[in-house]
Every structure is written in C-alpha cells, then in structure tokens.
Image (cartoon, rainbow, N blue to C red):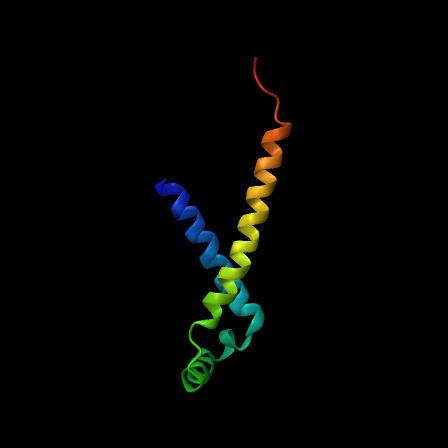
Amino acid sequence: MKSIVIREVTIFVILLVTLALLMHPDLLSDPTQRLALMQARANYAHPFFYAFFIYFFLFIVRFTVKKIATLFKKKKV
C-alpha cells in the first residue's frame, strides 16, 4: 500500500512540474517574477487544480486499461 501511494504521489508531482513548465516557461529563467505575479493575483492553487484534473483523467484511463487488460488475460486452469 505504501508503495502505491508513493508511486501515485510521484506521478502527481511529475505531472505538476511538467504542466507548470509547459504553461509558464519563464519559471526556468525568472522564477521570482512568476512567484511575484502569483502573489499579486493571489492564485497559488491553480497549478494544483489543473494538475489534479489531468491526474484524475489519467487515473481513470489507467484504471480502465488495467480492467480491460484483466479481461483478456488468460486464466490459469
């Protein structure tokens, strides 16, 4: 159970960082300016919301593919 939680948190963090860098490439060149803009607009949570929605979508897809794969798996007799 612990390894599953660690794996899912790792997937979420990688997704969060990837989305943040794709949406805001200036994070690599000037992160203090980006943080100042977030502070001025008070929108700290939006990266977490976007990452959560995409993570949830990917979770549903992964779950569906796993269930379909178990249907086609040969049963040992």
